[in-house]
Length: 228
Image (cartoon, rainbow, N blue to C red; front, side, top):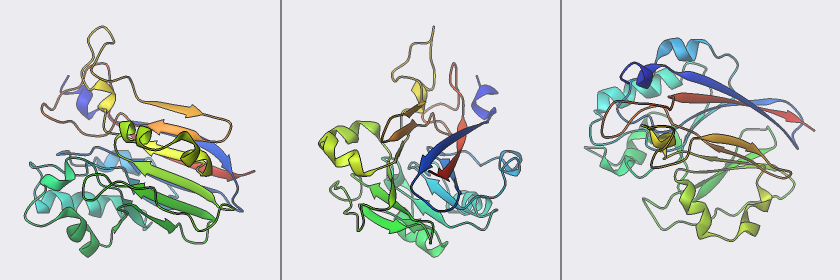
């Protein structure tokens, strides 16, 4: 179970969206107290953006370890975006959002941003540091990505809200982390392709409470967006 908790998987997904050029996203969530494995990152090339889907840290994480993880995620020289998770508020001695800004990371707390000149927008819902709200989009002609750490929060808003998004990214559940006879407190992580929207629930990279996994896998995601 300890070995399984460190046996990283690189999941590759693809989606056609309304952009002019291909765009590759590295997505990781629920790092918690793990140090990201350099060998896992070395398997991946040509990343246009890094998105952290929450629980980058918890009360166990030191500033030194967090700084090292950010340094490793900077390996591609791509911009890094952070959407908070429920455990991130435990990080000390200063709020994690201000700590990350000093490291060049771009937090999105009920905000949105353009992903460079790609024709993509990225929005982040944050119910942990402020009241959750859907960030307004400037243009419905763009291809849009939404990130919220905890999938359950998606039910807080009407389904029609999500029609503008081509891709929704979540985490939090760890796929149940420890599953006995394939049963756990949460369902397994998954990627689903819908007619309008693709959805990802990651099983996460680290662990909470105990550093063990059974029947789940620590995973990172390479999402390849290509033009229609």
